[in-house]
Length: 199
Image 1 (tube, one colour):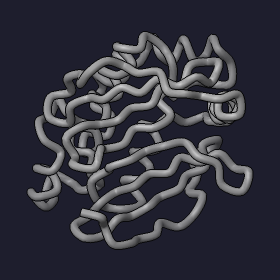
Image 2 (cartoon, one colour):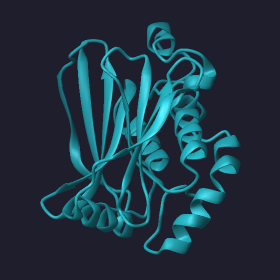
Image 3 (cartoon, helix red, strand yellow):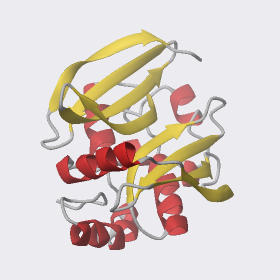
């Protein structure tokens, strides 16, 4: 299965990074990456317009961020509070983190990539995440879009009760949906839940 996240070894991570541009060029989950929604072509126009220009979608933001950093694995990608930018966190093989802000409108870089303060515990946790995860953020986003409708605003690796999961947040009008997937298998970890959206 094509991937652009790290596998359990550094070489797999480097290989995954090298094939990233080619993978993003594929029509992978066209409704997801072009619109970052779980809707079909007949979806609510307001959901599509919230995404902005085609170049500012989830996949383009990740590709731009990885191009800037040079290597690594996306462990978190999140819309900022006003929805104007994607905040992309990339982990290196040693667990260190770099954050890149990418315009949600045209996928251009905002500022410069900034290394995040990562202590030994956080770095070890990230390495554990990378070793466990067998699906990448793109796979997780695609799977979440099948489980719940809405515009994807966040995809991140996390730990829940000892299981590494991808946590995906989608916003549909006034409701925020949360989908959790086992990062090792891609299976649904917990039934989707809904709560009032901050927006």
